[in-house]
Length: 395
Image (cartoon, rainbow, N blue to C red; front, side, top):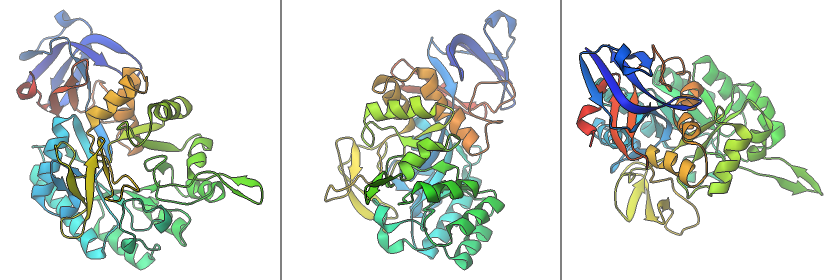
């Protein structure tokens, strides 16, 4: 079946152009700017809307009332369905620092969900493990009782058990043994990511050499410049700007960072080094005032107000309630970023960060037909995953 998507504005990595896309066997077979030169078995008129690559989400804890730490296929299905309807086509479900038993359960649940949802939902690329090897002083909304130093016996067991399932792991590089842990992650093809950390520049530079090339939710739960005996010392935040090839992700919900900082990160690092992330929790896509961060049995109660999740004492945010379409909307409408650049940070850049840039993240011939259609206000009206879908969601 050759399906032609026409009458749309194609969001390419460096421009937006009116054109059409031919999809065949789950891949993009042709990108053209003259419909008369394409033959197809069926044609879908997108009504002048935008057609973008499917959103690639590197960091989400859940949505639709479900958290990935719930440890069930049903929870994965609920969260994935919610995120998919908002344009996410590739996802790294994210765990929190937890007991060893919960971590093993999360790996089992991920594998079961990936098998059960294959061909029916978005792409579950792999797990993102957020902890437990973090800095308790930068725990944010993570329960400090589960934070600990890297233990080779423990993490080698996790890595062996999670081989093929774990794709990213956030750690604090100043913890004893962190370099050895990062080396183990690199050996297993897992992306080491720097976050929930009090590290200084002198610690980040060698960690970068050990493969810690990405920063988890820039500005959130990390050290910044400090002063000792009159001398200033750069933290994780400044290190991310000072190391040119270090990539970062930003929670662009309009709450975690104000528009001027979102714009500054984009201008300073460039769209090829910045990924947007929702870092969503279970209540993303819901209209509620309270929720639970983490598993239902061991998670923490949070409150929802001002468009964001907070700890009950309001001392810190507890994750966002945003979906990926909101991130693109905030970046364009509030942070003043051109639409094609905002979309790149939600598609090609995160795909490249996790090694999928040759398959996903841009509208190019040969890439998988993961596509999202939306209007001028970035309201999603259709989603295609591997050539499936789109028609039923058009309005």
